[in-house]
Amino acid sequence: MNVRLPFRNLIPTFFAGLLDDPILLLRTRPDGHHVMFDCGQIHHLAKRTFTHLEAIFISHAHMDHWMGIDSVIRQLIAAGKTVSIYGGPGLAEKFDHKLRGYDWNLAEDYWSSFRVYEVHSDRLSHDLFCGAESFQRKRLADLPRENCLIYENDYLQVSAASCDHRVDSLIYRIDERPAYRVDLDRLEQLQLLPGPWLGQLKQGFTAGGNFPDRLSVQRSRGDQIETVDIDNPRELGALLMKPGKTHSCGYISDVGFNPQNWVKILELMSGVDLLICECTFLSEAKARARASWHLCSDDVNALLAELRPRYFLPMHLSRSYSRRAHELYRELQCPEDTKLLELPLQLTPRPLIADEVSWQLFDQ
Image (cartoon, rainbow, N blue to C red; front, side, top):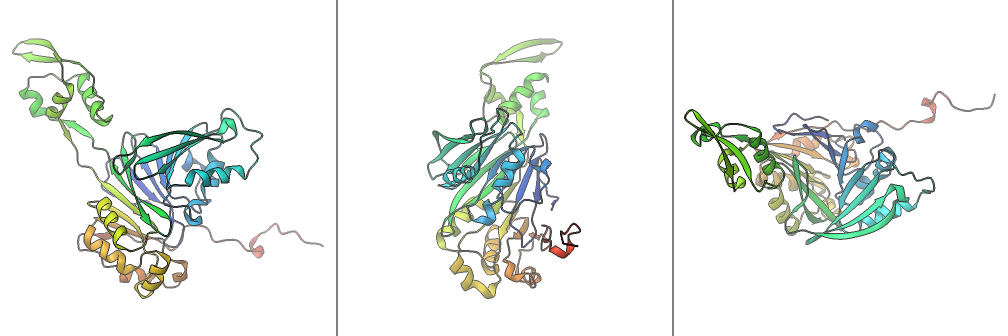
């Protein structure tokens, strides 16, 4: 499902119905790269969906959020790229066991590789599975982690917090990185002439503060044009560059409703524009939600009242409500400034039965 939202560089697609295994794909508009959140049942995704996949973020390793990793490997095995996979502690071991279930005696040099990052409170542990080496697991150095941020590229940042679902379950926040534009009035005040150096300053901001040590610019002095060396390009950039408005998306799948999780959710999801959140049970089944460490509609309503996102997409409703799914939308009470987005029940194809297959084998 494609949703038109005010993102500058992100195009979100939710590849699941209300009852399906959740799959969120985010495409960055300038370069066409993809990141994916959860991958349960994904056989309905076309191969080209995976072509530009750069990273996968797994909430937890229950089957409906993780089983599709085999399909990811199958689609990307000969793509000759490296894909990063993020998840909670123990994910690399689970990934290793999946790979060891197959024979890799025909491994080729052009096969893809996978980097698995396990998210801990103070670090990211790091393992490499190289396709050319038959996916033998190689332990790499840990990466320090000082805040919620776990991943970034030129256009987005992904932050995570670990919640309790009777196993560690990660919730994710995706923020657009700001795009910078030149303050033309300030440029004129400083009597500076536009040139390629402005692109260097923009790149300094978008590349995480990687500014050149020195910058040559041209300044107009009446009829005279002089070249000036700038010793502090960062300071000049702060004067000239205006960050544009950015937007964010929150992804919450399978968490228990308790005080600890509540605090983590509110801290990580504050101010998100689009909230995508599980609502597994209706209000009548609150006790069942508590027992299985899921959210019910009352819990989600409490979150919406606090977070007040501009858009809300409920997902991952229990299949026990397949005939009553419409009741969920009646129970959800969005704030006046929150738009509720509705999903069809299912996007995945209905399973075939034998009578529907035209090439049945039988004796004459």
